[in-house]
Image (spheres, rainbow, N blue to C red):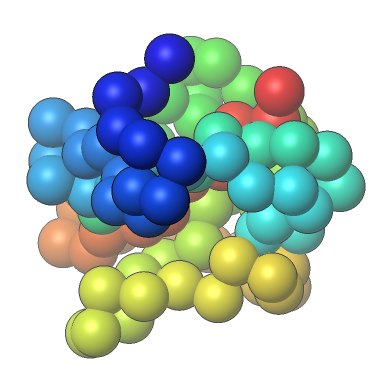
Length: 96
């Protein structure tokens, strides 16, 4: 369990200082997902290719690129193709 009281809305952070959270129907996945924020593109590429299909828009691991404000629209699914760029950061969703 995560430490904190019932009214504590702070989120734990990962090694890249991004938030970790659990969402429902996020980044195009239609189930509960765990989100890891602010993951560098080179790390996202390795995780997706080793643990899924290597495509950031399909499979059980999907990603959304962070904007300059470090926010990603967790409610929308990107279309087309996103190639993980080493110089960018992503929020990565893992379907539970």
